Amino acid sequence: MIKSCIASILLLSFTVAAAQDNYEIQVYASPTQTKGSTIFELHSNFTFKGEKNIVDGLRPTFHALHETVEITHGIGENFELGFYLFTNYTSPYGYRLIGTHLRPRIRVPEKWKWPVGVSLSTEFGFQRRQYSTDTWSIEIRPIIDKQFNNFYIAFNPTFGIGVRGSNDHTPSFEPNIKSTVTINKVALGLEYYGSLGQLNQIPKIGSQSHALFAVADLFVDPRWEVNFGPGWGLTKATDAFVFKLLVGRRITWKKSRKA
Image 1 (cartoon, one colour):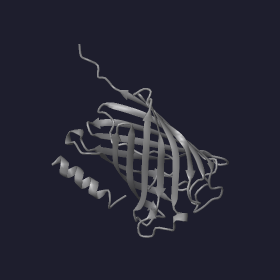
Image 2 (spheres, helix red, strand yellow):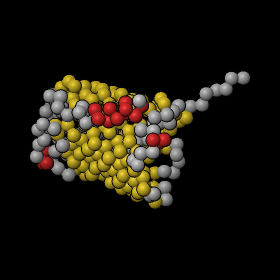
Image 3 (spheres, helix red, strand yellow):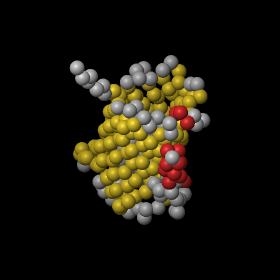
Image 4 (cartoon, helix red, strand yellow):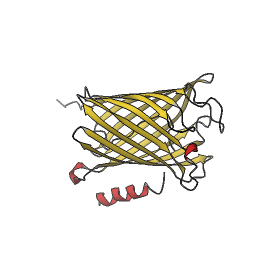
């Protein structure tokens, strides 16, 4: 029964699906948060070279600072719930609260012994119109990954759809890929982020968004998550240069014993 439910959800992910733009630059791994534990994360990035003009009513990204607070709690052994708070600082508009999202995620249990890790994230919420053409949106992100000794690879074939805004509700395809090699508790590698556009009217590649980041992950302490690196836009429609930093802290809550 459980297998049938998860399989059905995975199939639905390819029929439904808005990106968070630069508010969370991350390729997801398949494991969910451990039951009864919470991770507090701060996603930060600064756009050194980006759009300087207002386009489609959206404020410029040039010298924009994005700060996103993410709190994720493990509800069950293979289920978690995440919450996002998006903020933006861009001169001369100042500091702004952009919106919030909720993200439930379910994972295929390890005891099923699948050859790859698999989980499914579903995210929905609100963003201000000055920063997103879709004020309400849904994102469905299948997550597939595999660890081969020191080599790691993950693929997130993400789909998004605007619920309210200029989008006509046609799913857009936004694939993410990560590949790293770990040496002495430091993983070095590449992360790719793409947005090909809506499936019924995919534009020419020059109008699509494609970015490549050189990243490092630090594994010095299992309680902490650290990921950072510079990213370069590969098309004119993509911000030319962005630097990102992710810092997370895991906490396991222990119930007090009764006397």
